[in-house]
Length: 83
Image (cartoon, rainbow, N blue to C red; front, side, top):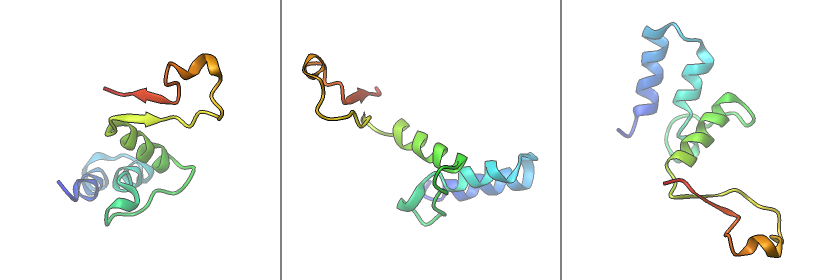
């Protein structure tokens, strides 16, 4: 569902008794790629958003420092397969 983030946040607010930060993390987990709110940098919202991106990716670039040490180059050490 395209607006699943907003619908679930409303359910959390109206029926769950969970705190507002939980609802905010749910409604902002799609980040700037959708009409919902953008997560606050460095917050639990940002953590949930990042986890959602990683969970939906085929592979994740973990940002290894460069240059990659020669002994690690043959292992594609800068990529993590999440399948």
